[in-house]
Length: 317
Image (cartoon, rainbow, N blue to C red; front, side, top):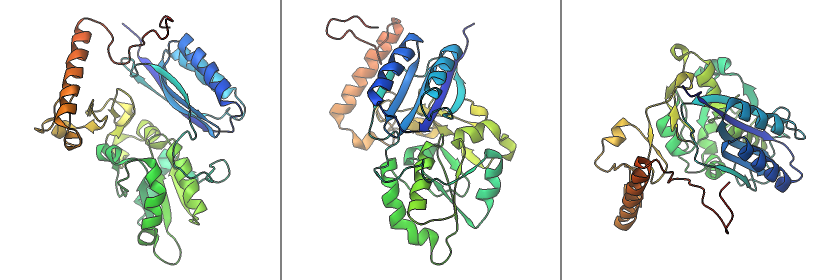
């Protein structure tokens, strides 16, 4: 019986002096350890999710934590019955999580961390405003009781949404407490830093994010409703980080629940309710053919999605 795959979601805001050198070293190490997933490197830090053997993941995490100012890199572990990623990507970006506010630096100022076991008391307080900082399709899969959904399509839209809704949310006089959360904690590092820069004093965020809460808080005590969307082939997880019931629309990469799969607009590998109207007949036909080719390749035991092809005469490695 094969051992389950170890999945590690990690991030750290730190000053990276040579992004290219770190990228090259991590790419070589991950490939040498047969690790798959994505790591993003920027001058402000490192972020990503990787999967592989427990030993290989441990070596990659140890290497990252050995970098300057990275000893306390936040890592959340889970498992998957099969590899949830198709390839390994190590990329350099301007930001490790894109907000588009260059003056925001979570290393200088950030909200107050709240442990998963203290989170319920905070968000159950009627004086607390609870904000889900994730994208709209993530919120649709599940969220906390009383949470406000900004209905943002990307995290970059969050600052504009807050500035537009600030008066309605906070009113006049003494601002209420604001509690924010996201999948693993990284978006809240920036969103709480942003609110503090906007003059909001009592700002809190869930330490370790939704994933840590679902791992540590018993289901019978939980204020979480639904499942948590994750950016890999598991699609969504529930309490205890058990695999959820959502599947993934291969056309738009949004999660699809049981009701969505029963919709006449849902066609596996082609479209779902959310994206059917966003695609032309020609695009759906192309997706239908791609899905057919993938299934034929799978039946032959040949990789199709994410296959690594030789480049410039060099063998795939």
